[in-house]
Length: 100
Image (cartoon, rainbow, N blue to C red; front, side):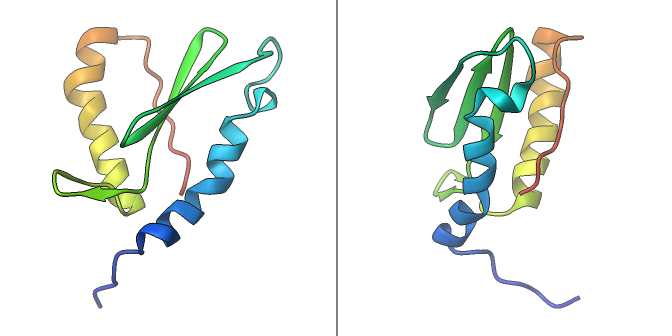
């Protein structure tokens, strides 16, 4: 299988722009959600919508973390759910994958 280069930072961010815009709109969450609060961190964006929270790992690469591809972000999300999230909030977290 040929190796493919990881996308550049700009390419990776462009791939996420549409998803970020969608999740920033109350209409994305259905009835009963009138406002969405967005919390930005260096590696994630969290949206608080109604009684739920949604998290997107940014397409970034730093010395200490590489989320530059969908596969790397997905792997880390699975690890997070298995090790941290479920031990604290069993029955609360419902994972969903939005690509890219």
